[in-house]
Amino acid sequence: MNDKARFVKKRRHARDKAMQALYQWQLSGEDLDWIRDHYLQEQGIASGDEAYFLELLYQIPPRVDALDRRYRKYVTNFVDHLDPIETNILRIATYELENHLEIPYRVVINEAINLAKTYGADDSHKFINGVLDPLCEELRKVEVAG
Image (tube, rainbow, N blue to C red; front, side):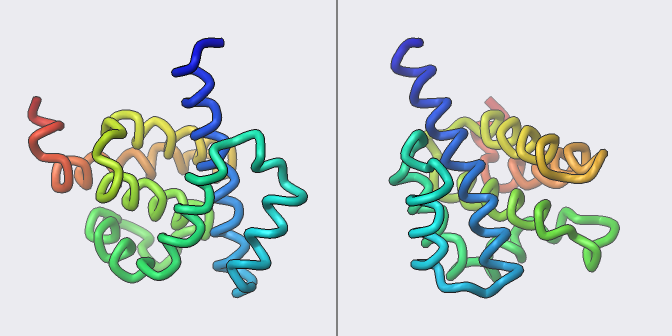
């Protein structure tokens, strides 16, 4: 496996664990430091991009209101029925679109769809895609047009 493939795999693993940790935080309200310790010690985050996991874990919770406002305007149906899994997938994707311009928008969408296929309800990946497509057009106008 080359360095780029290894990097992508580690980043994917970090995103996966961050989604699980944010889900746990949202449902339990547990302290982020406790969740961090749990994931670092017991959930195998060391095989991923630990720094990226920590960034997502600590940067998303203080921004949930702003992140939710960003993507919710593209949730046309069932805004009050957003599953916590889908909510956290959309928060991660929105955060990445806003703060990680080095990650192509298509990669952000693809990673979010993969998380939805793994953890979400049957058709949640279609829902995630339907929300992120117009969000990308808003946040990454030049990149999408190119």
